[in-house]
Length: 545
Image 1 (cartoon, rainbow, N blue to C red):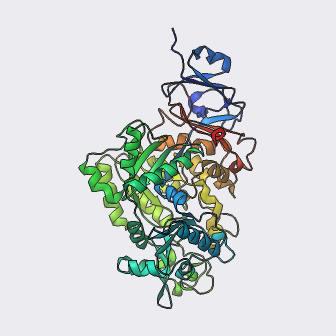
Image 2 (image 1 turned 180 degrees about the horizontal axis):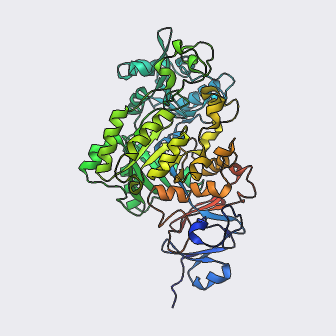
Image 3 (image 1 turned 45 degrees about the horizontal axis):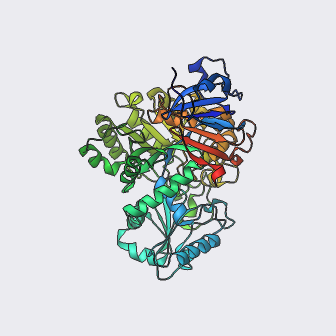
C-alpha cells in the first residue's frame, strides 16, 4: 500500500527547470510550457510530480491539499552570494537603499536617531549615489547634520565604502589606515574604503542577541522573495551559532551554506570543519577571500585607468585617454589581498580539501584568481568559485571553463550598466558593454550561479536584469536566468542531487509566483511571490500578510 503524502500542491503550472540535456524530454532550452500540474511531498521530499490526476492517489485522510490556482511553481531560489546579517541591518537600522539624494539619506538617519535615542551609533545601510542629481558619496558634512555628538555611519551599497560623520572619524582615527581614508585639502572627507571599513564593521559588530534579531528579520525578508537557500558570506559574526541554534530548535526556515572569510581559516582548520559538513539546513561552504575592491569605490583592480579617475582628487572628469604622466597607481584600483598572499592561501585551502570563493571584479584581479586556481591539482572537483567576475576577458572565461571554476555572478549589477550609468562613468562605454557578460560565460561552459550580494536581495529583480541586460553578450533567456538562480546555486554548493530542480527524490523547496516570468519577460521584477516552501513546509504565504 502506497504511503500517503503530507501535502499536495495541485492546479499549478509546474516548471522543473531540469536541463533538457539531462532529462532528454524533448523540451527546448527556453520552452515556456509547464512540465506538470502538481507535486506531492512526504517528509520534506518530492514523492510525485505530474498531472493532478496522476498523483491524487497519494492523497490520504490527513493530506493537506494546496490549490496553486494556475500560478507558476518553480524550484526555490538559491542566493549563491549574499550577506544575511547585512540584510538584517537594512531591516533593523536605517534603510538607505532607495534614497534619491544625500538629503533623503540624512532625513532617514535622523529618523533612525530619533527612534533609537539610547543607541550610541546611528547606522544606515545601502546608499547608492550613482543616480542622484548630485552624485557624490555621503561626506562628514552631510552626516554631521544628523548628529554632532553621536557617531554616524552610512555604508554604501557595495559595502566597500563607508561614510562617517566627524564624531565617528574622531572615534576611529587611530584605527583607519591612512591610504584608505579619502581627503580633500588634507582633511578627511568622511569617506573611507576597503581596509578602513573593517574598523567600522568591528565597532558596530552586534552581540549574540542582536545577531539573532538581524538574521530573523533578514530571513523573513528573504523567504518573502522566494529564497529557500543562501550562501552566506560570514565574518567576525555570531551568525553560525545563531543559525545552528535556530536549526536545532526547528526554527530555521531556510537552508544556509556558510562561506567563512579567510581570516577564520585557522579556526576552521583547528575545529576540523570541511566543505559540505553539517546538517540538513546548515552546512559548511567555502573559504572566502578577496583580490580587489569594487567598481563603485574605484578599487576594483583594472588594467586600464578608470574613466573618471581624476574625480578622486576633485578635478574635472577624466576619460579613458587620460595622460599617462598624470596616472597614479590608485587610478587602476587596488589589491585588497596581494597576489602572492592569494596564491599562498589558495594552496593552503585547497590542500585542506576546502572549497575556495575568491572575490575578483577587475580584469587584473580575475587574472590573478584564475591563475592561482588553475594551477592546483583538481579545481573542477573542488568547484572553486570566482565571485563577481565582472570584467573577465575572453581568455579568462575560456580558462575558467577549462578548469571547471564556478562563476558566481550578480545579474542585478546590470542596474549600473545602462548608457550614462555608473559603469559608463567609471569604465567608459567599451568596458561597460563587456561587464558581466552572462551569456558569454554560460556559452563558454562555465558553471553559472546567481546571487544578489545583497544589492538588493531579490532573485526576480536579478532575473529581470539578466533577461533585459543591455547587450547580447550580457543577456540570458528567462529559463537560463532562472536556472542560474536555482540549479546554478545548487551546483555551486554541491547540492544538485537534492536541490535546484524539481524531481522525485529531491527536497521540496518551491516558490510559487503570481505571474509567469515567460509571459512578463520585460517586467519580471514586478512579479509577486505567492508562496515559498522549504522542505515541504510553507514558510511564506502572501495571503497571510
